[in-house]
Length: 506
Image 1: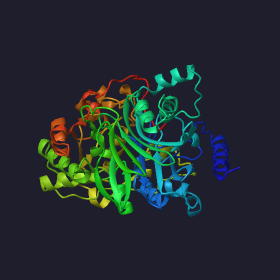
Image 2: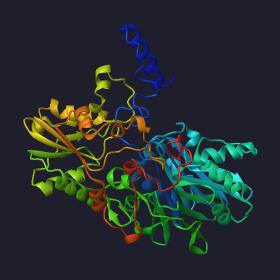
Image 3: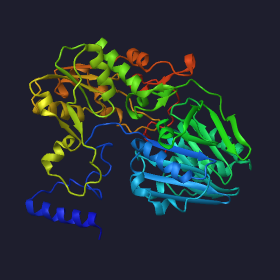
Image 4: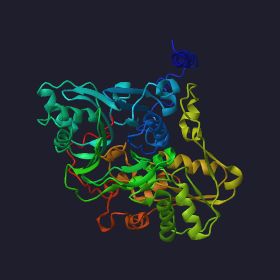
């Protein structure tokens, strides 16, 4: 029996003895899946991260460090697949990259080409079979796929393929693309991939590996971030530029909507599988998901967040004693707000970075105030002070209430909440883990009602116009644009199946 099972068994007996019949811990460890729907921390969760290498003898090691840099995009599983002449070598596991890979695990992953993946599960099952890259054999040889995003019409395609005899091994949307590639009338892998991508709808960044090729593809609206880099003569692909910094690579450019890049022994080939539609980069990447040191479409995320804070200060100034940000994504905006107003920025909230797998079940009281496992207020900083609390979004409102109360318990006399995005009113169908519309507080309540619900003295959301101005104009110039469907309900693609919300990585 594992230590986790023994610990859980002991706690079950203890609950029975104490008369506590409420099931507080249903996973293998206390905070399994924490942060997602129904978790203690009412924040959105990113879909996944991908990393690719072509033409470097240490492709697996580079991928390992690349995954470390992208770990914030998914903490549930990690995987690397390398191609060595005619062989595929791969390893996948549940947990963080540092837990999945050791020197012994990396040593067999020989080859100069690789694709790698970190995953956060949303709609699908949390199990090793869904960990990526997914590996398949088909008539032209081995095939590996890694995805960031969501295929909107995957359920429809899957049902049709199953009726025609296809047998699926996972619950992953990514497997749908593998079946479409295998069933294509084209023997040439590039044409087969184009054929398959022409049948799917959604937001996705694909990396596809064969024994002698690496293929990268971005959806026709460019909804997911996807960048190209170099390290010496080797080419790199990643969900964010911070992964290039981690391996000493340099950024070349962003992938273009509808673009297909093929790398083989003859070099780097730019192609298309679809005409690019209206560019619609996910606005939440700038607001919350991406690392501050990443650039999206040449726009630095930290700088964009600082500008959001400045715009927020212009739109909703409030006299106070200090400004503090909810770590980590709101720190940049809090600094911008403080700079614009002249109100001092202080570290009023501290994040506990070691709330990993907790096999000891906390008390009911601690679970009810679960945010204390992750955040602490600095009493000597906020006590007796009027505090402006900067955060990036309000989803259900439960975490905002907990943080406001945390500051009040630490002695803050007033707590004024400022949000660096418009009210989050609509679910995402493009690979971000969001509740349904009924669970989104901004879809059910007015701003004043939300203020009351989160126990704030005042509440203000950044306007959509202010947000867009703060994010700025990227390399695409007038052709650039953002997906803001979660704020304005204007989805850039047809939503094929609204019942399915989640991530294609599942």
